Image 1 (cartoon, rainbow, N blue to C red):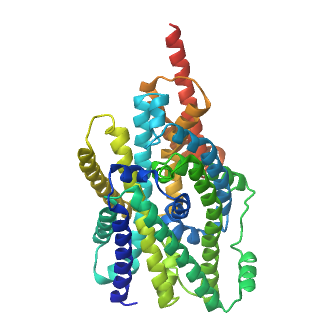
Image 2: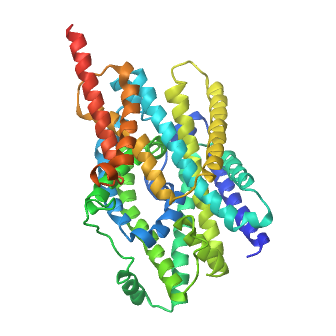
Image 3: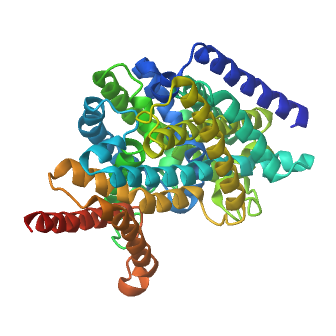
Length: 490
């Protein structure tokens, strides 16, 4: 593939994104940025959320995971259904009832100012880390397989992508992202379908033969019954449910898109539709992963140098080096789509949360022009932080991104799970001033347990660490509630 052709594809796709941004930002104001003027069609949000949920993590990591973990990831995905149903029936009605722009406003009304800001802080930390990881994965592949051959540094690659994302997302915010996400979802899914078709054609198989080959292969393993294994099917299922709740239902990035729908009913239809479609899309990614490994085995390809550091590189290695021009171009466009969807919504959500939850712009008497100027500065600030995080992570990449992402989410999203669960399912008051301490202690305890569990009990924690983290936070809040009750008696 020539550099000119690669650059042309990148430029055309970027221009298309800018065109959509131009269409959606005409007459945009602060309400357009924060909640899309409450006018987003639910089916557009549902479709676009697929790409936002998948992003570079699923696009790159999930196919590579098939080589070591088979299809066990599907049990996590099945758990998503339970989680998304909970979001649709429990969380969304609460958010619409309170007419929230930032979902962490609920914590302020339920517990107090410190709880409000603590919830926002953990979201900001979680999303900044998560979005940086996702974008790093894409930037790293673009650099390793394409731009490094032109002498372009990793840092410059990251800077260019982040600047592009800033330009098209800074004005329209959520109103723009709802529509650009649909474009990104389309190209990501097309990349997987076209790549799968090319591999099937290369192997000389029909549709029925392909399914039989995958289903009878060593890679088609969904259920693990060894409870000490981190991929045990019950651990995966319930972890998937809680991951969906915290990384969608308690995440400002994902919920901001839902809150831009006209009504609660439309938002609920969006969530249910999105959850069902996501099962098939994730299976498609795993199916592609199996095809990639089967193709490698059949053709006796030596890809050890490509996947020496991480199996995330399998998909790009085959697409750009073995499967031909169409596969390479398809992969690159899908990768660029993943890059944009990894960061644009995150920047908007981070800006929204910091503006409303931390700076409290809605209650401090700022006029519309001041709010606009302030959110531009905050938007840029988080873009710079994300860029620095990407460059930093380059130095420590040593494992599949998806495992790192969910492991870290187990630490940073756990306190949010505990806070919202305690607030919604109890009526107890807490000593608000001590809530930050509880939310810091719970992840620290989880880290200690996770680091030593194999030596202490022969047990390996997986994604269920998130549930333990939330439980410890809940227990800490319960303890605070007894303290508050005793002080009120005295």
